[in-house]
Length: 160
Image (cartoon, rainbow, N blue to C red; front, top):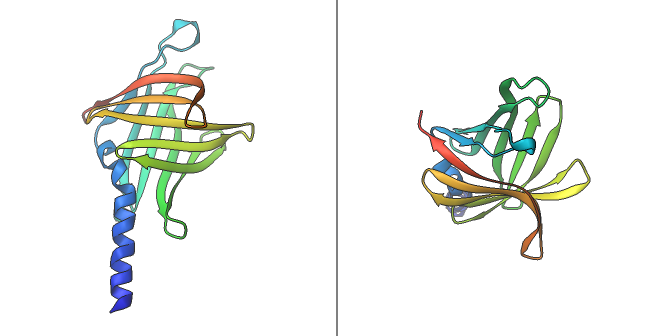
């Protein structure tokens, strides 16, 4: 009996950990910030459940800076790690790079923390505005505040 209660509690905590991602499912999340030189640089993110709602699978599309072709750049996974109760993520890019880190949740806000090419500890924050909008900030988070911001944009859901 104890074992069944333990399994139910463990499964429930996994579901609670991943709950912050629920709003991202459905549609495309489009960002159109101004890039260097004032050019528009559209990006699209798509999210879906995987492995019986135990993981989130992501795809990220943007313009290639050299060819200006729009296409798939990254695919990723977000998952609850039961051994230490963290949410981990992995991003695999088309150039063979792998980025890995942790996701901290705060209500419906998502904070991705990772080492960028072994040089910099970065944070990407998706701050929930409403069901169809997040503000995105990428930068260095230190001592509870942004030390440096590299990118800020509105991310808006476009329905399927």
